[in-house]
Image (cartoon, rainbow, N blue to C red; front, side):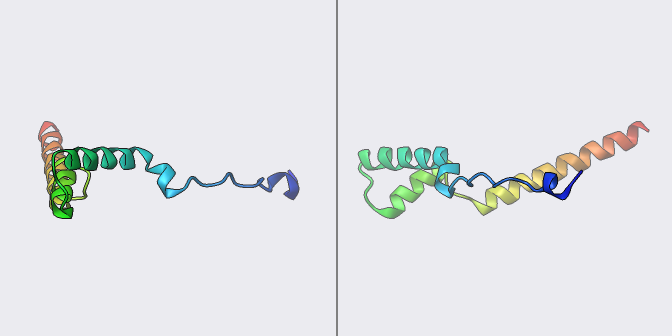
Length: 84
């Protein structure tokens, strides 16, 4: 195999951040539209609607999910050890 045959061709263009997150943007726009149609105009009201829809990152919820997953994994490990 020659060096020339090992040289990769040009890399395909990387999708933009907005392109990769098109679904998230559409969901956020839908939530904002619904909140505004319901009379929300204050940024905090719109943010609350996004949080309720699960669009905003909630660090406590993420920590709770991670803790529950770790607890389940520990329980699974304990059950497997008990079987042995």
